Image (cartoon, rainbow, N blue to C red):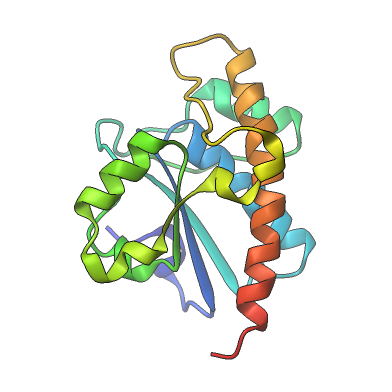
Amino acid sequence: MLNRWFRRADPARLRVLMVCTGNICRSPMAEAVLRQRLQRAGLERVVAVDSAGTHGFHKGSPIDPRAAAQAALRGYTLDGLRSRPVVAEDYSRFDLLLAMDQDNLATLRKRCPPEEQHRLQLLMAHAPQAGATEVPDPYYGALSGFDLALDLIEPACDGLMQEVRRRLAAPA
């Protein structure tokens, strides 16, 4: 299955994939946050963002309603997003694959071809000031876990925007 934004002509110069375990909580929230940041910066046509899960057990499922509700309270929309697993083509299709936690990163590293390993990072590497290296999975916890995830994702996406601008400014 092709990614949502590959269904039309793709003018993107940079491609970012947010990755969590099931692609129903953290990575869709991160996709929505980054998408909003890109729109505000006028970069939505040159940077493509998508999300996926390391495991396909929720494939085709809608986003967790708790994630959608908490994101909506902050002005983000997850409407229409459906879970999908990371596929082999993602490792060459995306410039950055950003994992929410060390387990997600380890799974990506195991599956990623050696020549594409440089594309893999933790999302929180873009927010060293946050004092966290991972975005904890809120799925089995209280509603406050979704707020905590967003509290970490937002500054990470702000830091990521600096990296996006740097990469776009670099010669091709």
